[in-house]
Length: 263
Ligand SMILES: [Zn+2]
View 1 (cartoon, rainbow, N blue to C red):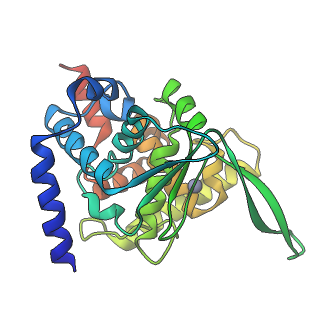
View 2 (tube, rainbow, N blue to C red; view 1 turned 90 degrees about the vertical axis):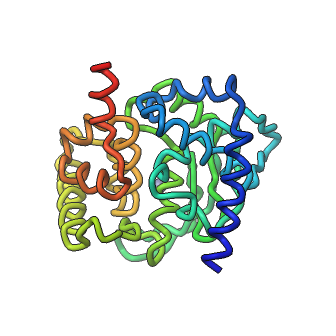
View 3 (cartoon, rainbow, N blue to C red; view 1 turned 45 degrees about the vertical axis):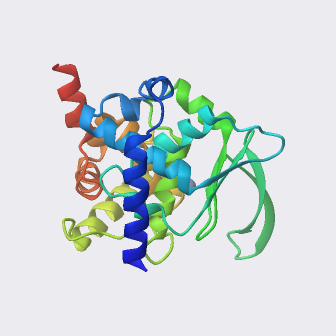
């Protein structure tokens, strides 16, 4: 099965190297902060991965949203940033990317302090289901594009949930390869999460978006957003988390930034 998938991916890659995303569309994408500082070799790889993802996934606009090729490209290119070195197999197991015009309501069971379960409606800008679609709000994507170096990127957030889910469901720990030490990863992430929780409980200004304190699952997704869009801030506030993510994603966005500025 794995071999078949590899052959399938190789065939698509070979075909798309000849027919990548066209140049004028691609130049629009290069302005995003998570893409701007990539080396030319990395940009070329991202362009190929983006082309494959656009072929592999089904994009569905709902509530009247008409998805254009440009909108799909904006989503696919940023989704491919976290898996630039890991490869597209990290996004296997789901087909659909659903896009709402704006934030959408979902029903959730919420347990109060007395342990009673309440059904509540919650407004979301994105959601990822295990073996199900990635769901995004276009309005939130547009908002992130306007402030794209501030640590907010709903596309990266939701696709990093997908990476997390590859390993025993969503638990804040993706499938950690040999280059990371699992015990170190757990200690470093638990420590950072506890520090953020303390900041929230003592009403201090939080080092990163307080939403990361919701759970270790959200901490991993939010830390990944910062890693790719505000890497200097993450390195400054949680440098060990930054180092673990650099090892995991096999990317060093701070170094990239320095190289870019020294050109
Ligand atoms: Zn989340």
